[in-house]
Length: 287
Image 1 (cartoon, rainbow, N blue to C red):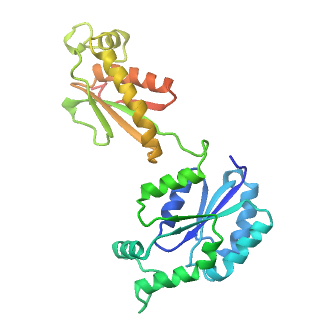
Image 2 (image 1 turned 90 degrees about the vertical axis):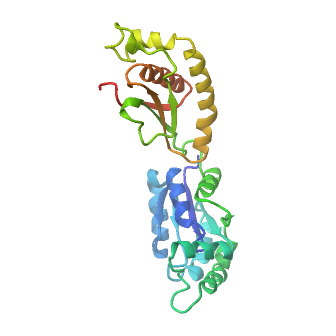
Image 3 (image 1 turned 90 degrees about the horizontal axis):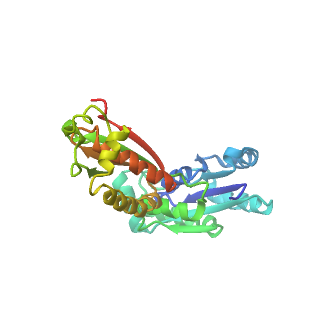
């Protein structure tokens, strides 16, 4: 990881600067949007002495007075002074920009009054030509979704310490009390033998050793756990690369006290052993 890294995020209005800054923030950067140009040097000095801002991303655009005329010289001075500063320039084609402004109904900063939207877009493209020429990286977002842009930011600007781990929560529940509304994945465990019908086990829960052994030693339990573990080993990294920060997995049985609880405890232990961060919540175990 670089001890200091400052990224100026700029580009055409509507090309995704705000979404890019959110992705930088999710990647661990200290982010500031619409910083006035006269404060840029002061912020650079602050970031140099503040560990929490050692990696920072600053959003600047044409709305800042004098930005197209003043920023190229200011950025060049930063470079000549040896500061660890770089520029990301976002752009998109006219068709994509017109579509985005039409969908959001927000006014283009250079297309107010009687100026047509397309004329404003073209004026901004011409005004920022000198800024674009200084960019370290240019990303054309014409065909990007916000997820595509997030992946691009992570690819080029994140490191292992900047990527937030995928936090996985396993929720157990009883179908008789309804399915939780916030599940990403759901697995029905009612195919396993039910301890509810064993008198000595009925008052216990899946957290008790006797119930856990009864459920996990049942035919099919180990195969289910092994197959599910392999499936999650494939799936979790792909959720993480997509930018997902939280994943909720539901394990359900009839009452939410025995089978779902025992299997959830076992699966959580396997996932933790594989290096995943896992929380377990038993919704209906006390019902």
